[in-house]
Length: 333
Image (cartoon, rainbow, N blue to C red; front, side):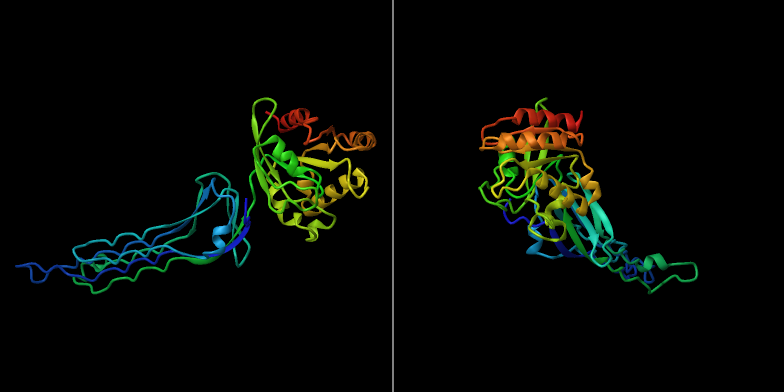
């Protein structure tokens, strides 16, 4: 997912309505024909449409202004002008739309094909035919078209996934995602290899599938902007389950209990609702020396909290099937 952009700001301008026409019948033997000016057409709307094949807001860094067509003016012989064509802007599924000036949430586009009218076109003006009355047989009055709506909008993308992978940098999230899905995020033995979210479709043990999201690793103070993970925590807010990866062989010798607490504190600081999502713990890198001894000390601690932890190695495949069974059970039917 190169050039991942999850925030954008655009300006939308709906089409103006066409003006009404002032016209009178001019036919042979009808020297004083009545009014026959048609109405103006309606201006086009600006419409946002959710698209499942889009995964980033990158397009909106190149183009920020979007305008719908204006309505045609009315014509003689009671001809109404054509309505202006709408302007359809495609955005990724999972996009939140807000008013830029107030921050008010206007729409949450979470299903493919879902539409939202971001700016409404102006109504067409009435032609002079509309102003004919018993006392005014030849009105020379017509209306201008209404102005179309115009405003600045902000987009905020929250990816849609069933499962969110969380943990400190280099805990093995990307390696696990590449093991259980066809996703191929960059994997390297150093922190912050993952700089953008990645999605993968996972085949569960009961033949169901789910979507898993891998976000950049969290560090202490991430909710305040430290590191890169804080920007992407929003992408796991919609998930039903968190898979919390804890490294059993951290290179700097820190304990897994500290890592476990650090991540949960950051989740709570960012969003209490996020911290209260169900968690499945995965003790990673069990193929490395001393990992089994570390796990023996870690397991009783988390079990005392009512959590079950699965020992895995994404490199050798150890425990992967058991982890998928735990995920399937936690997601429910």
